Length: 228
Image (cartoon, rainbow, N blue to C red; front, side):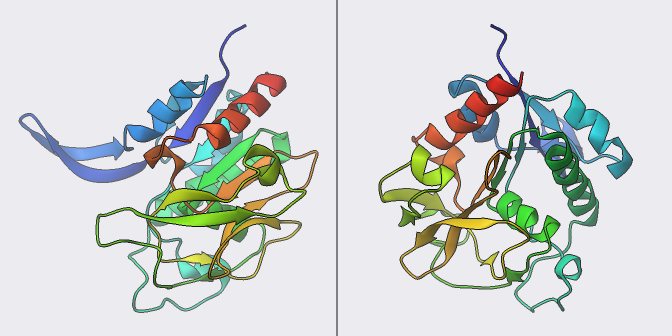
């Protein structure tokens, strides 16, 4: 059976390699490697015109919205906090359109860190713009345990309290329409969200691509295989 095709969003930044210093579509290699290790074929999705999102999603079996820049607060009706990072407007527009298209088409969707936050915003939720204790240091992943909420899809995937790699200073505040909190940190921070069945849409606040546990990505790939 052909492997499911999993699209992973990227971002545009100036980058250097060899003799070149040019704008580039970037994604840490850990993301496609995690997809590959979990049984999927990874394809990278650079920001595009939002009108192309439905066509892009129609060619995928599953979608991963990757981590990265803070979501622009205007997207959820808030004024920017002084600690909120600069906006990535093209990426926000593209990824929100991808999320809308995936939900409309029933394409399995996994949001990672920023991707989870954007899923919440796409469904009308809001974000806490700054919290402490979920990053070790600038450029250094932290680790902390998360506890699953019994009866959720996440709990069926990872039933035990598990330590996860984490790097974020924002989190879910008010949940978006129909979303359920499916894991929490010890301080009460929502660490995973999902839509109830039959949709397959899951967001995790941590970075599974920076750890060894394949179960979350394998669950997405399994759902994508069924859809394929």
